[in-house]
Image 1 (cartoon, rainbow, N blue to C red):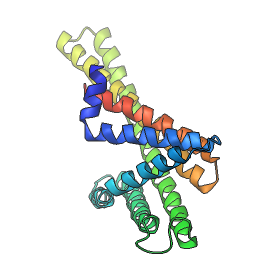
Image 2 (image 1 turned 180 degrees about the vertical axis):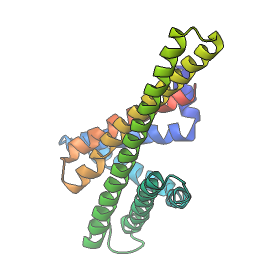
Image 3 (image 1 turned 135 degrees about the vertical axis):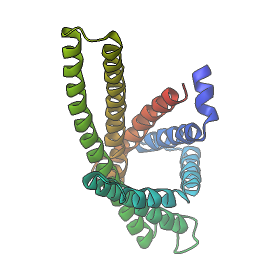
Image 4 (image 1 turned 135 degrees about the horizontal axis):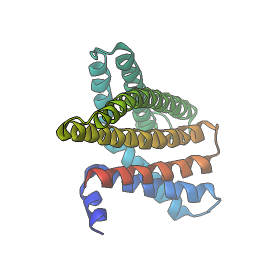
Length: 229
């Protein structure tokens, strides 16, 4: 209960709880649940979450520009592509929102709105796949570091080095294991997240896309609970 209250107090936790409800309702609708109330609530939640993301594209733009200054060119370019992909995804999502609330066009079912929604889903998918590729690269680098430190730790113990040196290597190993576990969790979440735009594009069924949204949100809530202590 205490952990749940900590999650609720965090803005990111509140958004994820709304996201969980949104995709749960979408899953019900894709399961042939014929309910006007469920459809109305899902549409309102979708609209509310789109509105709350109206400035997040600027955040990704800033991340992309900062990534280009990374001395590690491969990592920097990769991060920039992933960030710019998500930035343009949110921008196209905002345009689709304008169609949805009929500021432009004739509503979310019009041909231009459907095209913008499809483009948004493609950019969303590309952005997440870029992030996954970066996480795998980071995991490979950390694994190499782990093996080097592990060998040093074993040699220090075999040669009877100072206890403080051995303990520092042990602590370094623990930190690397913790970071690698966190990255594996991020990879799992973002790979599952890819199912959401894939469902919108017709690559997967809408039901599978909604289930991916539920599962990735649960992983995200777990991650938030760990971060909140």
